[in-house]
Amino acid sequence: MIIETLSTFPDMYESVMGASMMRRAQEKGILDFCAYDLRDWTHDRHRTTDDDPYGGGLGLVMKCEPIFEAYEAITGIDRGAGPVAPTGNEQPKTGPAPKHANGVAPTTIFLTPCGRRFDDALACELSGKERLLFVCGHYEGIDERAYELADYQISLGDYVLTSGELASMVVIDAVVRKIDGVLGAEGGADDESFAQGLLEYPQYTRPASFLGAAVPDVLLSGDHAKIARWRREQQLERTALLRPDLLEGLELAEDDLNFLKSLLQRISDDR
Image 1 (cartoon, one colour):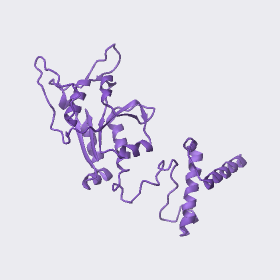
Image 2 (spheres, helix red, strand yellow; image 1 turned 120 degrees about the horizontal axis):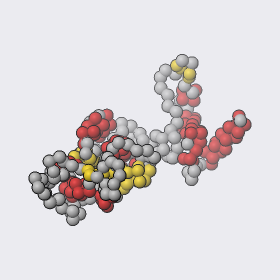
Image 3 (tube, helix red, strand yellow; image 1 turned 60 degrees about the horizontal axis):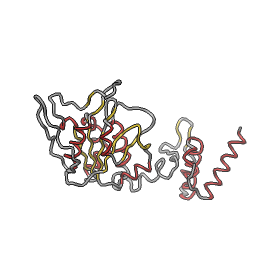
Image 4 (cartoon, one colour; image 1 turned 180 degrees about the vertical axis):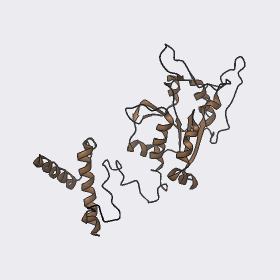
């Protein structure tokens, strides 16, 4: 997979993309990552990417011209914007030579509070794409006309971050771990929280007893069928108690439904 980012602070990606799973994915040739600096497509000596909003108001708004120019250069696709004509002492710039300007459009993603709420299903959907381009906002927002380039508009949740770079790192991490060969264990993401619509079951490792708290006996039994059922019931119980909203519309087997009924009865009796 090719993942590219376009932002005003590309250096923010160095620590995340250069360590742990992300570094290994690149070393294996599974992931090809490149962070572009939006300022490379500006035309003034101050490398300006923002301006005051029309109509007044607080903050600054990111300009659409450098975003369109960068998109055309990175993708090799002409959207008819063309470079902005220089005035005064300005000098035209074309930006760096892109790595993948082959005329094939990437799936372009804008991080915005107005976007679709990011979840595991969307991470799976994006992991099937061959090329992703993240356009990261900053300041008060992005000129609305730039969203014409978006295939997806994504929000992490009902809160505001300083920059789209932070949000894009979360999305990239969640997407890349879904790609075959990235995680050490085959199918390692299959049992994680949300993968099957449920929260993950509790995990334990050595020692078997610590400060009076013991690992559940079933996990020490060696009976794989009993362990599998215990884990499933723990998923159901955790989800019912902590995130009951996840159960809405979820198709469950009869055994699962019976367990949930008995769980709810126990909770009612305890009250």
